[in-house]
Image: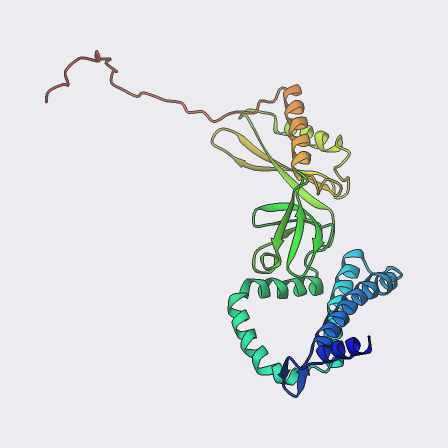
Amino acid sequence: MNEFLHTADQWLHYPLFQIGKGEVTLFGIAGTILLLMFVVLGERIFRRTIVKRMLARSQLDEALRYGIERILGYLFLVLGFYIALQTVGLDLSSLAVLAGAIGVGLGFGLQNIFSNFMSGIIILAERPIAIGDRVEVGGIAGQVSKISLRSTTVVTNDNISIIVPNSQFISETVINWSHGDPKVQFRLPIGVAYGSDTAKVKEVLLAVAANNSMVLPDPPPSVYFESFGDSSLNFELGVWTRDMVRSPRRFRSELNFAIDHGLAAAGIVIPFPQRDLHVKSGSLVMAPANAPPPTT
C-alpha cells in the first residue's frame, strides 16, 4: 500500500512541462481545476446571498441593482481566477507575450463578441435601457426581460423572446417608451368628408378620449385640425396614457373603433379617395374591336 501511494505521489508531482519558472504537474492541474470551481461557486454565493441582499435594502431601482450585481460578480470571477492561478504556482508573467499574441488574434476574429461585451458594460453602467422597459430597436418591439454582457432579451406582445446583441442598442437608434417619465402621447390621424361640421368632429373626438379609462385626464386630450387634404379634412387626436404603453397596438385599435362608432353616430362621413373626370369638349367614338386603325 505504501509503495502504491509513493508511486501515485510521484506520478502526481511528475513535471509534465514548464511555464516560465514553474513546473506543471497533474497535481497542479487538478488543484487549479478545483480552485476554479470553488471560485465559480463562490461568485454565485457572493452575488446571490451577499450583494443581492445588501442591494435589496437600498433605495436603488431594480434595474440598477441588477447591473451592479452583475458587474461585481464579473469582478469577483476575474480576481478569483487570478488568485487561484497564483496559488497553484503558475507563473503568469511568462504568459504575457503569448497572451498578447492570442489577444490580437482573438481581437480580429471575435470583434462582434467583444463589441457586444463592451456594449453590455455601457448599458449596465449608463442604463439607457432597463429591465421592464418597452423598447423598439431594429424593427423589434417588446419588453426588456434580461440584460447580460453579450445580449439583451426582449419579449414581444406575442410572448416571443428575441435575443438582441447589445451592440444594436449602442450603435442604432433605440425608442424607449419607458425611459424617464412613463407616460407617452399617442397621435391618431382622422380624415372626414368636406362639408362636415368641424366643431362637431372635435366634440366627438374629445368624447371618445374621455370615455376611454386608459387615457389620462392630465395632460388633457387635444384635437388638431391638420390640413385640407385631397379628399378629406385631416384632424389629429392626441391622447396621453401610462398603462397602455406595453400594448400600443391594442390601445390604438380600441380608440379607432370608438372613433368610427362616434363619427357614424354623429352623421360624419369618413371619405375615401376619389377623382372626378371632366370632359371639356369633343366627342368619344367607340370603334369595334376588329376595326382597322384610322389612316392619316
